[in-house]
Figure 1 (cartoon, rainbow, N blue to C red):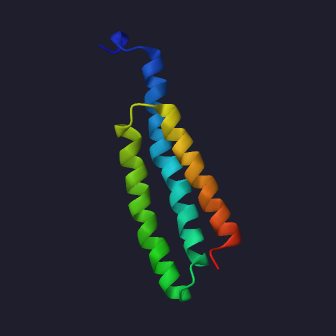
Figure 2: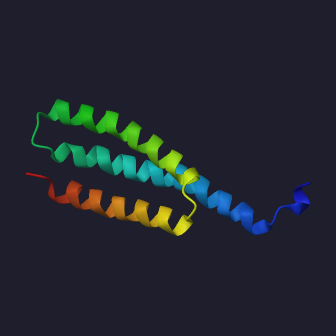
Length: 93
């Protein structure tokens, strides 16, 4: 039964799992750091960052298995990570 599955499909599945776990973690962590740049109280920014990071990680994990294109998936993760890195570096102030 396992011999009928192409070896390339294993790599595609591994890339999707990596996008769901590692990519979701990177985007969620950058969002929680970028939320500290909000013009709010520090505790409110921390709460927004923590709650938002869980939602973002779940969304990226779900989207990584729904989208048909791996290139679009990794491109969106990279674009989101670059955008959040800019916001985390320079802030919104």
